[in-house]
Amino acid sequence: MREFITSTTIKNQIAIITLDRFSALNALSHALIDELSNVIKAFDEDPNILCTIITGYGDKAFCAGADLKERVHMTEDEVMDTVDKIGSLVSQIEHMKMPVIAAINGLAFGGGLELAIACDIRIAEKQAKMGLTETSLAVIPGAGGTQRLSRLIGIAHTKYMIYSAQPIDATHAFDIGLVQNVTETGESLNKAVEIAKRITQNGPIAIKAAKKAIDQGYDLPIDKALEHERNCYLDTLETTDRIEGLQSFVEKRKPHYKGN
Image (cartoon, rainbow, N blue to C red; front, side, top):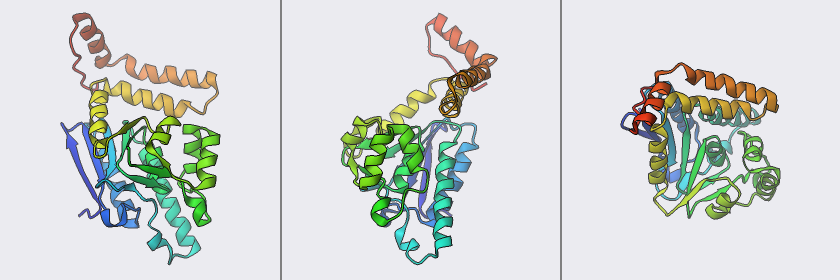
C-alpha cells in the first residue's frame, strides 16, 4: 500500500505521479524513494503509457530534496548509501522510455531539483524556487546535479548555482533554460498535461526513437552521433505508423497511430 505517492492516468496513455508527503515538503525519505521507484518501474513497463508527468502535492513544494531529519542520525556509510539510492532513482527517471515532464509546483531543492533535471521537460509555477543548495550544508550535489545541470544550462550557470547555494526563481530558471515554461500558481500540471497530450498525438515509436537519439547521442563525437541518429531512424522505417503518417498527410486527416 502506498503512503507517499499517488498516481493516475489519462486515457491510459499519460501517467501522472504525485509526490504526496506534504508535511515534509515532499522530501525524499527512504519510504518515498521506494514507492516512487516502484511506480516509475510499473509505468515504464506499461506499453500503453506514452508520457509521464511528475509533480508534487499542493503549491509549496515539488520536492525539498533529501530528508535531512532521517540523515542526521546516519553513519557515513548510511549517508552514502542513501545518496546512491537517490542517484539510482534519478537515473531510473532519466532512462524511462517515454518523455517525462516535471510539473514544478513549488520549491525544488537539492535532490528534488536533481529529480526534475532528469526529466525531459520542466514546467514551473511562478512562485517556484529552484536550487542545488548542498554546499550550504558542506556537501555537494550527489545524485547527478553537478553533471546533468551543467549539460543542461552550461558550466557558468551551474557553478553559480552550486557555489552560491542560492535558489533562483522561475523567471530566472526560464531565462537560463532550466525550465521551458512558467505558469501561474496552480497551473503547472494543466500545462504539463497539455504538452503531454500534444506529445501523445505523435508516433509513439518515433517519440521513443527521438529520445534515444538525443540522450544517447549527446556526448558522442559528431560522426558517431550521426550514425546513432541513423540507427534510431531505422527503428521507425518499417513501422505501420510511418505509412499511416504519410497516408494521413496525403489525405489531409489526423493520423491514427498504433505504436507498431
